[in-house]
Length: 340
Image (cartoon, rainbow, N blue to C red):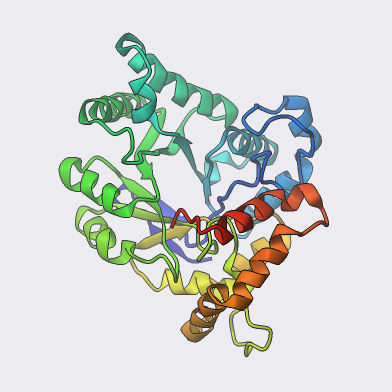
């Protein structure tokens, strides 16, 4: 495994981390097949009954040198907390947690409750993660619902919590790279940023990375595979007759991202040991990045043949629950929707 420094935090993080939404009930192909609504917190007993494969995956990742783990939804925190507790390796890794839309959330919260809302969010994550501290606490701040007053309140409260040692660094996680850059210019309050960056969606290279370098802000990359359609891996559009090289298509996408020195770590979603091994192998392989392959995948995805592939995905029947979210994203892509 190779390592890079996460900006001003000084954390030495693995080039390949682990993220994604594997433990969101509505996305995970391997767990939680019950009919509970997606937003409902799963019962501890139910989670534990499906936890063993995840424990093995997390332990294998750490033993292979992976030391950066990103979590978003509640299930992810709960699962990672159990896995780290089972392995006893919490002190060997960096854990990131996230508070969704705190600035917008305060808009509908009485001002007297603002402080408690932020503190409660941190305490909930600490409890779910079975830890006394969070290495990187990300806030998700889309431009919709933004206000300077509420934003500054969130940041100032998190700084107080940071001084208490409950969080080590303050980060931001968002898809709007230009808005993140705007906040950084105004406030310089983030120790790290987590944004999409891939062969298709690469505007962060111009809009954000130079600023991150100047301010010593670490860069965590999400969505390395989900392009050009949100929620659907580009590997669905690999030409059948492509010429195999040093890297697999997925490794090619990761290696392309790692060419940017501003990138500290990538956090791909990972469900299996095979996926883990494929992802981390890219850090020990050297070779030219086949951009032409990525270009062909993009062209294929946007071609009539790609649209036909999307139609196939909307009809995919095997392991229905596992494919449900892919079917939904494929349908929306055909309708012209894309968060990108």
